[in-house]
Length: 187
Image (cartoon, rainbow, N blue to C red):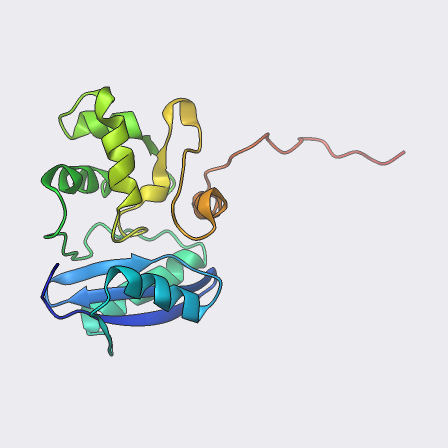
């Protein structure tokens, strides 16, 4: 387990309460919104049990501002956010680096990420495992990864695939049948 000191903060956004943890090297954990602040804090501390609540340093405060803007539907690019993935498997780190290049309103697939990391499509299952273990969802935008054929695929955050759809819709990515072009007059 990582022995570097971690601090965390809980923040309120338009989507609910999120939480962020960091150390001297960067953001180490991000918790997507839970049902309330207490649940979100508990979920974050489950993965970073030694973290202590703290005042965010300027770099983390900037990330918090960006997260708040994202949750209001503003296009935000998290590519340059310093993150500490030292505890992650080398293949997962490659996957995460490739996924960080997938921008606002864009999607990719598990198979495409596997190929980009130098593995064949058969490694798509391992990509799925990397997404499930993503320590900083949103910053590493695992919600932008779809199954083959543009299918939604899974999502392990609170709210499951409903949260994934909501995040993608914030970015203009639509699922389901298109809205009718003509409205009924109700005769």
